[in-house]
Length: 155
Image (tube, rainbow, N blue to C red; front, side, top):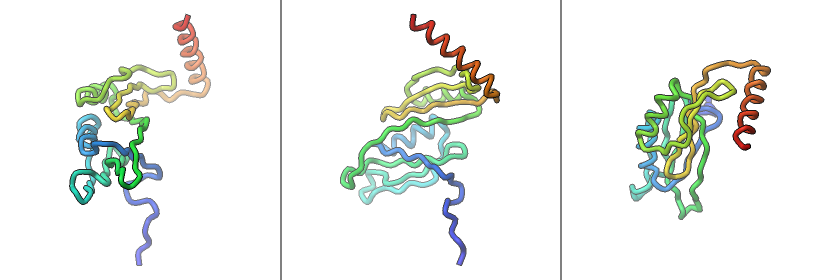
């Protein structure tokens, strides 16, 4: 008998799951916004809700399902971080697909260029492209400059 892998092929140790009201709509939105690929979808017996859907965005998995109130389920929101090759193009694609613009792309002191969008269910997606590998000293200097700039803005 073949030994079963404890982590299924193509999966990572940690997988995000979004429970929301309108999983089919969310799946289509994530396809348009992030290029998500739908791996599988398991509808409930009525065919009206999604019990489980498996999406792939880049090399990562995202599970999406409708809330099953009859089973004690509830909506949950999440903050997600997505690294993509071109944050500016990804931000434009996400907002064109209908996600709400929260923060346009900006260079951050830790070496990423990032932006933030959100969906109608309250999930926040931080889209980033890593641009620079920094030493701890460079990152501390950047952080100090960032905090000084923030303090100036509060005056």
